[in-house]
Length: 69
Image (tube, rainbow, N blue to C red):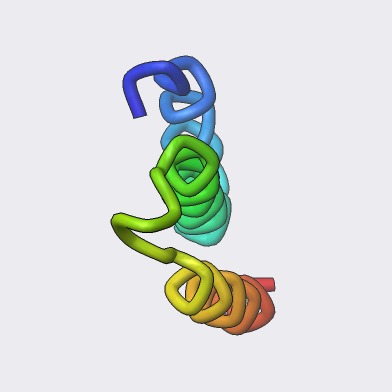
């Protein structure tokens, strides 16, 4: 999240102004997913395989975002 601090602040401000946490939730879920995907790129495949976890994260994120919108 440190690298995305300006976007984090923007998302919080947008959520506060609109009195709707959807913007912040969407940002947070996207940032977490980006982190997982980036970690998977650098993970040594014989140590841990994140494929199943990534598939579940994509599904959960998609489901949650569809509820927010």
